[in-house]
Image (cartoon, rainbow, N blue to C red; front, side):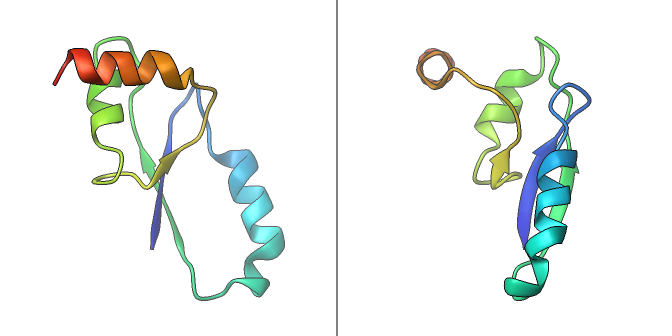
Length: 74
């Protein structure tokens, strides 16, 4: 089971549509969409849940900024 983070601002819809088009080729994998809130107050909790609650997130991210924020909050 692959857990995909999806929110109102960073919807997994496009990925899910793509997944459905190739699902017959990779039947052993299943998806579960996990909703999250991506407001300013909750986003660090979301990032810290990667690998625990989510396998990956959909959206545009600045990886160096996320790394800095994660290190600053740990």
